[in-house]
Image 1 (cartoon, rainbow, N blue to C red):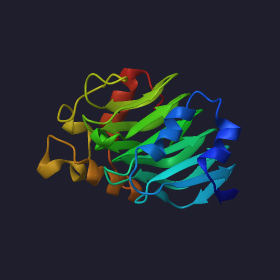
Image 2: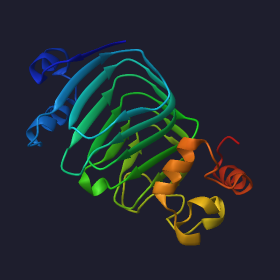
Image 3: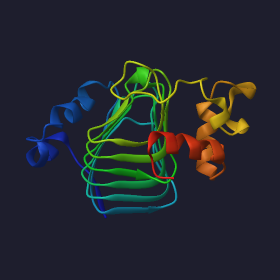
Image 4: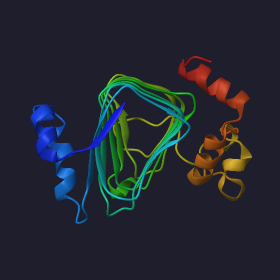
Length: 219
């Protein structure tokens, strides 16, 4: 893996014809603070969690990404940041929030969960291929989409590109009591993140099995 600080001008020479370039490049103009611009030559393999946070960032990872832990992309609301992965992504979990924008130009395969919150700050997950996870759990303000399909149980708001299997508060029996807000029925996504990252139960496995069977997902 090679990781280097670079500039938009240098990246534009290599990627300027890509359909996502203008979206990536605008990261600089939409920030008042300096943006950390990085180019990582893959494949990228990380033992443990991989965290992008705080300072605004614009990162291209050119190659597959394998994270033996949780991939966490978060920013304060005013620091819009953008990640483009030009390859497959595999991880235990994927968390995104605040003003973190993620574009994965291939399949995303997770052993656990996608959790997305505070999308009114600009956070979004856009997967070109298939997204596979146990659950895609989003607050009502946060969008995610996959161009092919999503193989997961989906909780999200209505009116976004993906259709929810259920809304927050509709299926408290699916969740372990430890991730419910004050006993339920609503889900505390902050608790979900902590529990999923620790490898503890988020779903009631018996209920999850039935829900996946009803949706035609692998059990």
